[in-house]
Image 1: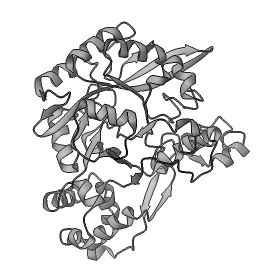
Image 2 (image 1 turned 60 degrees about the vertical axis):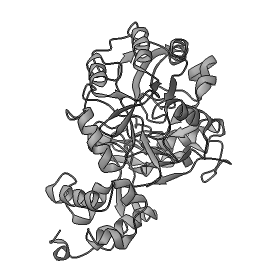
Image 3 (image 1 turned 120 degrees about the horizontal axis):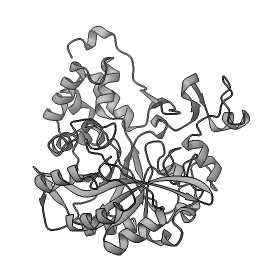
Image 4 (image 1 turned 30 degrees about the vertical axis):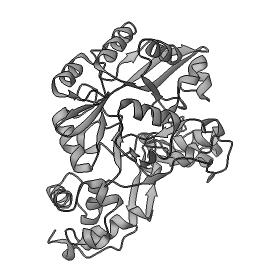
Length: 409
């Protein structure tokens, strides 16, 4: 596969609610299975994780680091918790850094605004605008990217503690914001509906908390790049270098529609508005989802595409496709065995999902699995949208086969 795939936003085991196997060894091994060339380290502000990164990663001298053939770039997600305009704001941002020396300078500054030891994603009593200024002052080659910009909590446009524009959040530092992370519950076409976002490069990352989740969203570059080349490409949104992003079907994200998890209530934005954004069962306030916020802020119709926009491809992870076809849980031995067989015999997961022909896949896997992979590639899926922390359900429009035909697999 000629493409160079990067996932910049992950977490280490030092972050809350993460797998204990989120270590460099496991991440490197899983990246190879998936066909990911470059991973963000995540969590570089945490002293324990930073010590491991220094011990286990070999610097290449170009701003990237290597472990057993997998490349890493120094990144962290931070939570900016502050008040602005008399309201509480919580915004998550990604920081990219060019070296361990830069990381140490950044950490010394950020430690003044919150504990870096408590969580791999630290909470900082620091306005987002001020943080951008401080970080770039001590590390001009760094890059700040607002994270998962539409989720209801902890995001730039979040319904609960966000803003209505990039400028409102970052003020005079808006000129130093070049890219936005779409998050699992939105995709580029949803963001294209806001004219004000045209100048920003849209990137997609997994925000993985366990090794098997890396790459569920990612960025596809035309060739390997060093740190400065990657930052330049992201800043400029160069479509000859950043070819496309790999996306969840956004409806699968756990905050796509409005809803109330306790009552099992899921509503499209129009339905929620018609009910005054209240749960029709208990009459409490709904969690306003990503699609609702997009509709509120959009100034373009659904389906609009700006000239020169970097395209995207929607995929379902291979393990989920296998799970659906076999009718077994994604963590079962049968699903893992077939996943291993496919990735060992044919190639990394992304090659299988994006490139391999159906007949080649069918030589190793049941033909129903091969057909389902092609169905997903063609967008032939049915989706029940996620809401209020509940992931959506994607069903592949594949012909159901009698269980007896699948027993050999």
